[in-house]
Image 1 (cartoon, rainbow, N blue to C red):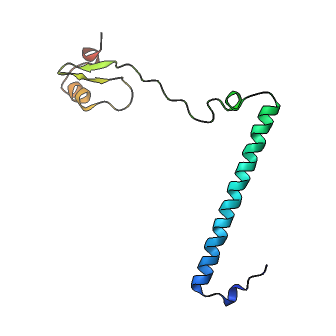
Image 2 (cartoon, one colour):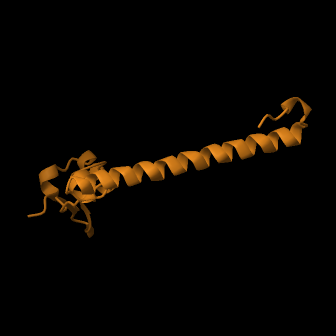
Length: 106
């Protein structure tokens, strides 16, 4: 199938390129499906499940929520685990001369 691209106008050439890129994407997707089927068959032939080999099915585990370590005495609903960026109330209190231990949850 030879296409004489010298005889195509701008719109025809753009359409050809678009269709060729779509076909290329379709072929890649088909290849992924076939590869996935091969991998699943190999795992099954070895007597394992996908979860045995890949852990949680390829998904990252959710992190457990960390208990709060510090509480704002002015507003008991504001807490902080001690991880990540300090909340404004905590940073402001430290700047005012308070100590971290003043906010520890007993």
